[in-house]
Length: 251
Image (spheres, helix red, strand yellow):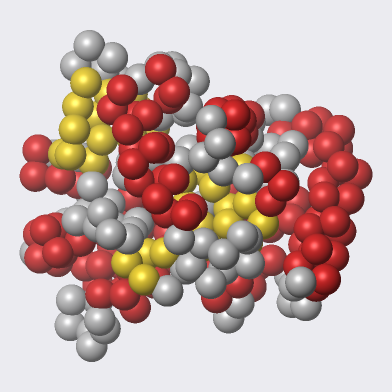
């Protein structure tokens, strides 16, 4: 378990803990802006999602943290300013409290439990990923930091992540590095946009495809085809889980 080598937490920790409030206007300000592409109307801001659980058995991968997750991450760091935590512990708490926060987490847990992931890990529910069984999971995004397109949460559609230089750089220079620190966990890409990134990485021999649970829908409530996609791929995903965990036990 570690802090990512690319972490900027030392640079921003004091600034976050000195904030007067955690409003959208404040956290999406020049103070926390990392990069922008004016032509494509993209902005990337800092948020402390840099903890890597390199011992995890499961990695759950989204597109990028949204505004709600960004606010929760800042709030966690802000309220820990008087606590006796080292940075690794604090960033671990950020992941547990902020990852897929809200209705998205509920939908995610429901689908993961329905395909029986918790049974392979000997826990009562994948809800435990976010508290007492957090050592089993690593949550992350193909783009580590929050991305906004025209001021709104970036959906992964427009512009295309793999055809946009500043976004692709995060995928190749941070996300791939992050995965390479893991010990062959089961990887769950959330939705087609993330799956497309994995297809690219596999085709370019940057990743081994046999550890990927393909077909899992993005759990966002805004994904209207979530249930249909889940039902269409459910049996295939159950079989992938059986095969993966049988392989792990055989080792």
